[in-house]
Amino acid sequence: MSRRAISRPVLLLVVWHAALAAGAWLAPHPGNRQYREYPFAPPTRIRLLDANRGLAWPHVCALEPEPARFGAYREDCARRFPVRFLASRPGGGIALMQAVAPGSLFLLGTDELGRDVFSRLLLGGVLSLGCGLSAACLALALAAWLGSLAGLLGGLADAVISRGAEVLMALPILYLLLAMRAALPIQSPPLTGFLMAVCLIALAGWARPARLVRGIVLSARERGYVLAARGFGAGSFYLLRKHLLPELRGVLHAQAAVLIPRFVILEVTLSLLGLGVPEPASSWGSMLANLRQYDVLATHPWMLAPAAALTLSLALFGHAGRWLEVEVQEKA
Amino acid sequence: MLRRLGGAALALAGLSVLCFALPNWAPGDFLTDAAVNPALDRSTIDAMRVRYGLDEPLPVRYGRWLRGLTRGELGLSLSYQVDAATLLLPRLRATLVLNAFALLLALVAALPAAAAVGRSGPAFRRAADTAMLAVLSVPEIVLVLILLATALTWEIPLPGGQPEGVVGLLQGLAVPGLALALGAAPIFYRHARAAFDEALGAPFVAAARHAGVPEVSVQLRYVLPAAANPLISLLGTSLGNLLSASLVVETVTGWPGLGPLLLEAVLARDSNVVAGAVLLAATCQIAGNVAADLALMRLDPRIRL
Image 1 (cartoon, rainbow over the protein chains, first blue to last red):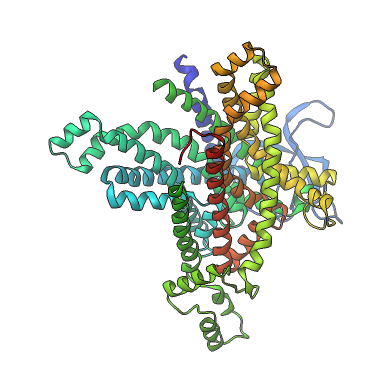
Image 2: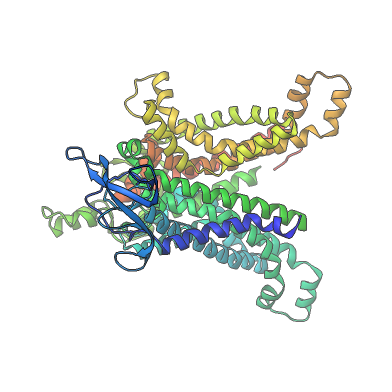
């Protein structure tokens, strides 16, 4: 395999994340801005043909609410508004694309409060994927620490840590998360909610990688060079830092590829159930929470956009994970 | 064997502490919300707290809860004013029915598919594997939302309001069961493909073929038992994932299982119901793992625990 072919899955993953982050920075609308006159507006069509069917600068038609029916709209193409790219955004910053006022451009429609779904999708992506990533880092740090402590010290420390991990793994993880969530205040501001979700997911998910780490440390402990270093009087923490942590790199990378997508799903699930990152911050989960009402789900399919984005992310993670698996096997 | 059961019992004991401590440790309890009610004054709330024993220290309450467990009680549900066990046991049954149905559906779909694909040409094999990988990356939350949207457009029945009997049960099971099964089937398919591949390459299969044993018996008598071990352990370990996914699927589709009740209890701070639901789910998972180990031991005389 050439070097370029090898890194392609990881490259794709990085590009997707970078696109989301850049998109969030260039979001067309502020995520919390409510366009109260346009609740549940369908995705706006960008038109390239003018009234005489000739080619024109991209533009949108005026969106008019139907007088009698809530959430029904018709387009009035007598009034057209050009789309401006990289225009200044109301409330500060630069917007990727925007219709000239008083026209409005909602690429993926709006939600029940008239907030732009596309902008919230980008912002929510950064939040949901960021939560999965931070939780995975925290869980792996915990796992590396506790797992190597258990493997290195043995005895009582090992017994306590291993039994603790077994108890955590005996619970279906979502039940464990809800039980832990029950020990925390139900309502919280968004930032606290985000940190709480990260810590909860990490605390629920460290057990499995910790067991793998423990196994590796146990086998590495008996290797010749480790015994030699010990014989020369090296302390436990010196051994850990110099000889054991480098051994763990492979397994920690492989576990990261497994844990990040799993933790992203957990954050989305928690937020969907109303126990994760609270409104008004947008997470893919809280955006999907509205769909628990059947009438919303049946008539506003554009609200499923976060589900599509989540699936795409997970597919990319799966792709990268499988590549990593093959890579590790070939090295071994 | 005894060691395995002992380990399971130890895990359960640890779990009971965890299940009890977490929801009861919370800042504020069921009665904190009641304090907002202007009709109740401070002394009434304090009296209620004493009556429910919420004023005692945690270890004392844990001891009383544990004694209740031995009598099959899970403690009083403060919002329903009945024992949590009477609330939870019918819900547990519904969850188990749903999970068993989904498991069966996933196995019935995945195993024959894996066997058939394993014997087909390489191009088809690659296409089928890729398709399964694509399904694998769709999480259950998304599956259930898509299925719900489809069901709503095509007017397929959803849980709730079904007539009694088998037909009603199957109608209610359709959407949540299919969502769970679609989530689990690709995993079974992948492992089954690997297991069948390995078994088909084994020398005893080649020997049986050359001895003129008919292909059907080769598959049933030689390949299937050889491939069974990894699949049985997979069943045991995938039970936890299935139960987790089931919690979301139940909540979204309104299937009257443990999930919606647990969520409601977390939001209402009904600690005994939370503890009971989590404990029951954990018991199911541990029982599943032990059952898988027992089945392995029974089917494969080489395995001793």
